Image 1 (cartoon, rainbow, N blue to C red):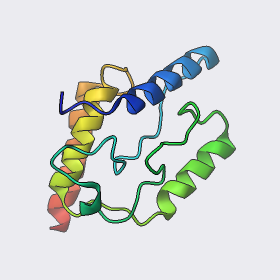
Image 2: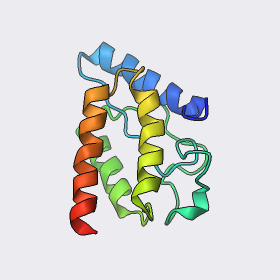
Image 3: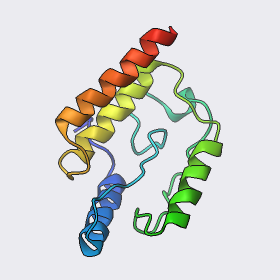
Image 4: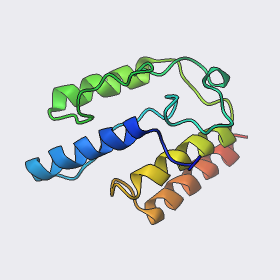
Length: 128
């Protein structure tokens, strides 16, 4: 169970799935991979740069971005923070933990997860 996200992440993804179904759109919830609820147990939150934009409570009401303006604000907030993984292995650990939650919640697939890791690994290799 150490590879599953905290219950709060499941709730956010579930809320987005319900909202998307009701609106007739594909579900997608932004999840901050630097939040403590997503980090692997071997990676303390202070080992990554900056802080989670959600804080410890993930103060989103339902995890959905129902309007373009809300999505814009979420993206602006996400990109204005100074939070980074200090290594590729830190990112992979957090991403795999997120994927282990997002796949059964049908917000990702195994093939897309592997493809995304492959692309990021290639970028990492080219810049190393």
